[in-house]
Image 1 (cartoon, rainbow, N blue to C red):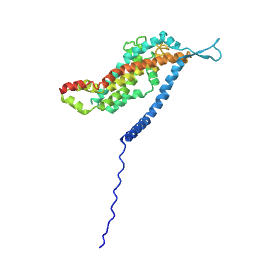
Image 2 (image 1 turned 180 degrees about the vertical axis):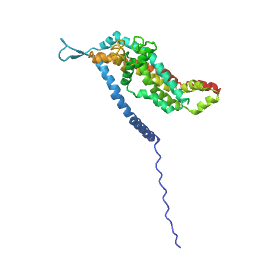
Image 3 (image 1 turned 90 degrees about the horizontal axis):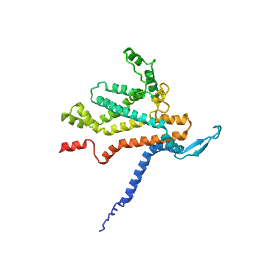
Length: 334
């Protein structure tokens, strides 16, 4: 009697267990590669359009052109150190330019932030029916180039040409838009005309992203439209308000187009009315690139310092892990 033996199946081989440390290293390499890939375009743009020009301006601020004799022939570049910075800071026209721009910021920034926020709240409330048409009409002035807007408003400000001044004259009202005490509000009006619609779009987009359950809870609690707007909506979009404040401040410090054009129409706006106009005058009228570079660096430092001062309270609040409405929510929960 013969026995039949069947071949025994070989058990499948299991792969060796993966090394956890090696897996973590591979994951970190992939993360670093993703970070570099995503940040490379921004870093290249930042270096090309910001860091390189700033570095070159700092370099130019330490040098000056020296011409011998009557100034004929090529000059030689000499190292002057901080002499250009001292000359800028001791120039009364540069200091008065900062005074003009400070007064402009005090008027312009609160008006543009409050006006655009009010328009966004009005659109978000649903009281306006043709909402998209209203958005387009409010944003349309921002699409007009700044120089064109300044020319249009300068035409409306010029006596003998302006139909607005003629209309006021028929009502026995005399207004000099280019006078000593009215030229700065006239410049603010041009900037408001083009800036309200742009900032309104930012606020309206932030309001549209609000959680609707929060707004419904406010209505259930008996909050009216005004109370909901200023005690619920505005605190939640505080980050957007801060961003608009910072951008408006930076734009105000760089004021150039409107006063540069009005310089041709009124003696109340001189060639160094703002720091940017001072820089333009030093570089392209006096051909003093060292002085212009020093003024540019000073303006950059002031802008960065003010921007940091604006964002510092919000950064401290975020570092504590709190929000403006967190305290009220905790108290209501108790």
